[in-house]
Each structure stands twice: as C-alpha cells, then as structure tokens.
Picture 1 (cartoon, rainbow, N blue to C red):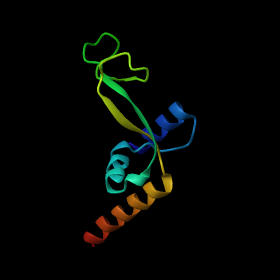
Picture 2: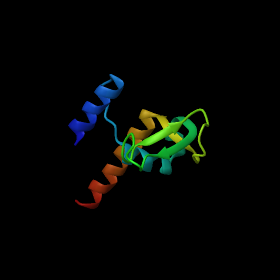
Picture 3: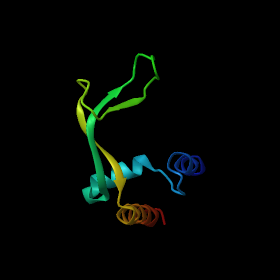
Picture 4: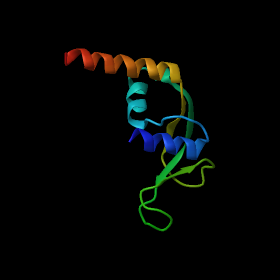
Length: 96
C-alpha cells in the first residue's frame, strides 16, 4: 500500500512523497495547525456516471449550488510526522 501511495505522489506531484489521507485527517483533528493551506470552494460528487462515478468535482468559480467546504491542500510535514510518530510510539508501548 505504501509503495502504491508513494507512486501516486510521484505521478501526480512529480515529487518523492507518501500521501496518507486518513492519518493526515486524524492529525488535523488533533492539531489544526497541521493544516498549512486550505482551498475553500463548492464540492460536488459525481453520482450520475456521466463523467465519472464517485469523483469529487471542485467548483472554484461558484457556478453550481454545491456546498462550500474547506479542503486541506497542504500540510505541515514536520507537525504531521511528530503526531504520527508519537501516536505509533504510544501504540507500540501498549503492546509490549
């Protein structure tokens, strides 16, 4: 799984990075300062299958009646790593 997500980072962003959306969301809940940059726009989910199925469509120009939400675009890597390492260490200490 990690290899797949790392390859996705290289393909999408042309960088050697590992995309961890679920741990990143959890870290942002624990410390909102993990969020370095946010996009605020309307978001639709394609359910009709006309263009895609289940894809999220961002409406940056406000052309739709889509609900306006905030999407984390960039995270503070150092803070994210600190939270992830601390959480994994705490879990490991419970199982010793």
